[in-house]
Image (tube, rainbow, N blue to C red; front, side, top):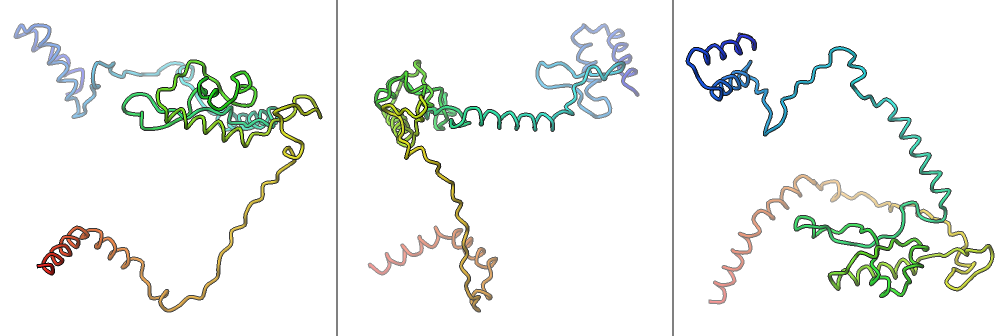
Length: 239
């Protein structure tokens, strides 16, 4: 029996026994749910999917064939931005450490919107100067705990100690800007990994990692029983 026949059969039954509309709807829904043994209804108060693209379906779908090209264009845009804003960092301004909202996420820390005015004041940095040296400022934030205030103040001080301020006017150094010696190029030296050569001994050859792991897992499994036995033995000796 196909779906159309089952639908007509349910309607005929409802017409014969003079059932009300609710019972008729339940019978029809039950026949639909048991069609070919597959549950085609959806959960909750959602729409039953009935997508059917017949004519001109090519105009109703969205393709993504330009994804590789967009990936390359985004990479080139990032490189151009890095060159344009050099020597400023590409990751954006420095942001504070804040805790997530609600009981579910308040144990995790993340980057906040900006440093509060109280944090900048404790670190000794004016709010107008902070935005010019790569620090985000949020005048709406309020510090609710002393620990959070101290952590962000220390973060600002560490950033200020590592900060190099280039002269705003070419060759003319003002107060608070880095000296020419500090602005010299600092090459990044990558350390080459070194490995020590040792002679393979007979003990190393006879070592079996699988047996060692099995013994350690067994010791971990029975550590409680071993501690209990040692405590009882010590108790017997003290008697």
